[in-house]
Image 1 (cartoon, helix red, strand yellow):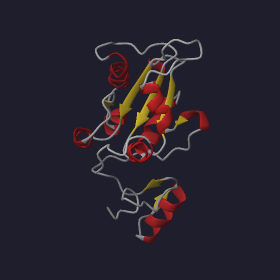
Image 2 (spheres, rainbow, N blue to C red):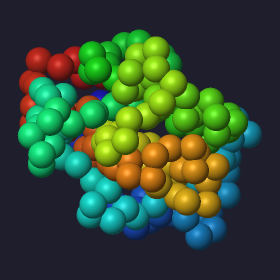
Image 3 (cartoon, helix red, strand yellow):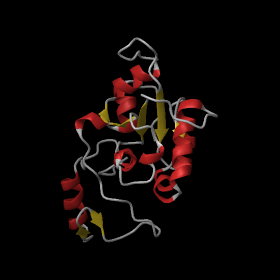
Length: 188
């Protein structure tokens, strides 16, 4: 509850604030990456996203309610939650498919693309054309890393997804969902 990054009143909101906090603790940062790794896994740098890669919780809510596309047809919407399996089992949006960030970054691109396809069709094996994929986590930090990774044309996953797939980070994650959309959504 008192954590500066993920507590009830987080004070670390930007990458610069995170760097300053790490420096105060004696953790050296090279570029955007701490010199320490987490169990042998070093996450990629926190990426800045263009405005067209970010969605609000209200936009996600509307999409999940079946918002129509510009031509009046129901827009194809997928939602992946990149928190680890334990966090996902504690609480998740009903439409979400679990795809932990660690798995996304370390497994073969085909497996990640197949998990994304399941976010749209359950048992399907393809992502629909002109669809939108929302990427969600607890606070919007891991989902930002995941969104940047999925949008990167240099990564193998992007080539396995439709070129017109919109990939959006849900700003603020589940904490913002609880604050802005559904106050009854469980928090942890």
